[in-house]
Length: 95
Ligand SMILES: [Zn+2]
Ligand SMILES: [Zn+2]
Image 1 (cartoon, helix red, strand yellow):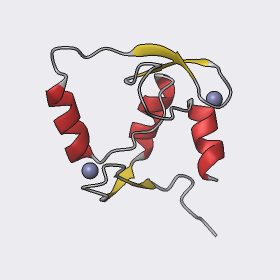
Image 2: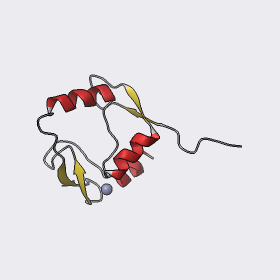
Image 3: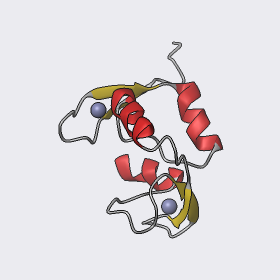
């Protein structure tokens, strides 16, 4: 029996006005893992909009994971009203 080793991850956009389901493909997942970033919580369209909004300032902030307190890089600064997990905690959290 041969099953696919890595199925695309299906996520739901966290934009309350969108809530669209979107897929994170394996190569994209690897990209985020390499950069020690959590997987996106917004669909590509919303992310594009966010990116346009802060295109003059595409900065990553060093902050701590809200769970294990490990130092990570995030598009959200420490004081942002979002819960930000490191890659490891993110996956633990959805399982
Ligand atoms: Zn969206
Ligand atoms: Zn963590």
